[in-house]
Image (cartoon, rainbow, N blue to C red; front, side, top):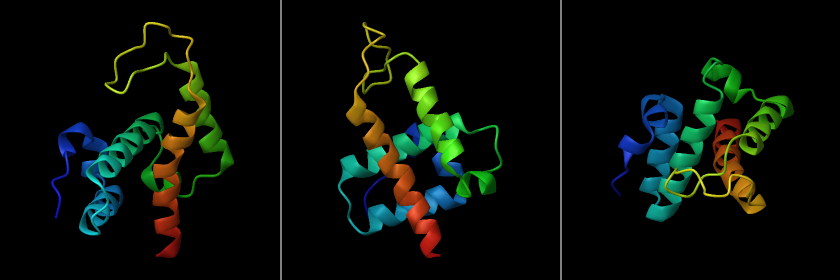
Length: 113
């Protein structure tokens, strides 16, 4: 199994559901970059909804997802390293799509169980 960089996603690592899902992705040999990106994106999402109990997050509706997307628009743009961009007004729409892939994957996995 691949090594997962849990130090970059402590919320994901400490949550049994998200930990199991990311571990499963590693077991089925998803690419290391996919695992790292999904882990970071889920970490970002969990940080954004930290005020909610996790079962409520799993039952998320459009309102919660809209709140998260609105938060992405509202905060300063970040480069891949997490550093703030020089131009805070740059927004990359594909980034929003990519960030939502990890959440969709987790929600789909939970629906199947």
